[in-house]
Image (cartoon, rainbow, N blue to C red; front, side):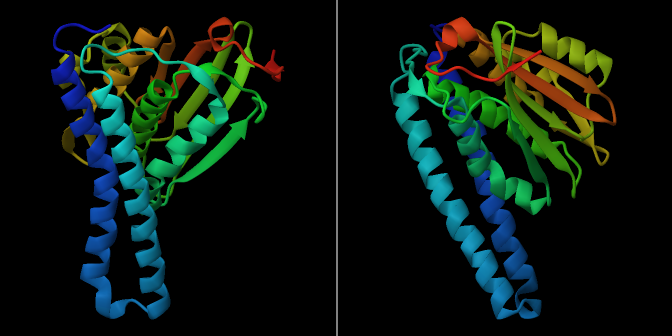
Amino acid sequence: MLKKNTQNKIFSIISHDLRSPFNALLGYSNFINENFNQLSKEELKSFIAKIKNAAQNNYNFTEQLLKWSLTQQNGIIINKELCSLNEIVEKSIEIIFPLADQKNIAFHKDFQLDDKAKGYFDKDIIFNVLYNVISNAIKYSKDNNSIEIKTYTKKQYLYVEIKDHGIGMSSEQLKKLNQNNDFNDFNDFNFIKNNNVYQGGFGLTYAKELANLYGAQLVFESVLGEGTTVLICLSLEDATLEKDTKTST
């Protein structure tokens, strides 16, 4: 359970998580508005299809987020059910894809974890952690780049590894992020991009607190100017996998 300010935190989560999907819709519609006379019918049709898909994804995501928030009014509750970790990762990518598409960022997936392997996870919490980490990776990646997402097992842990090739973090920012355990302090995390300062730490610090609550770990590795890798570590014992998985050595 979280502290007494759970409702304030839930509101902060909702307001933060809803911004990114709607930014994609605004981006597509602004592009059409500014370039309408130069676009062919085929190009217009393509952008309209993107807007439709993004709107549908946003609707589904908003509905899921609001339903989840209603169940968490008195503290965040862990609700595990049998599901596929790969499917949760895929769903996170699907929801966030329009933002990546706007920057021409490709996803390279390496699912070493068997697609049919299922475990007992709280899919809403895992999804929220993944969504915030991937969203952050897109935000601080350069255009025309890629994000690598891998699932695998090693020793007693299940891993989701998310690697971007963006602006990265300084050693001071990385140390502060690894030490921080309360996303109320997210204003301490400033990231610099194109000479502008963004308050970018909320997604990662929130993801870290939520993962810690779940009993998982987030490990951050970063080099300024080269990119960031985030490891989401889940206990194999906690996952209780129903099918054997491929194990990395």
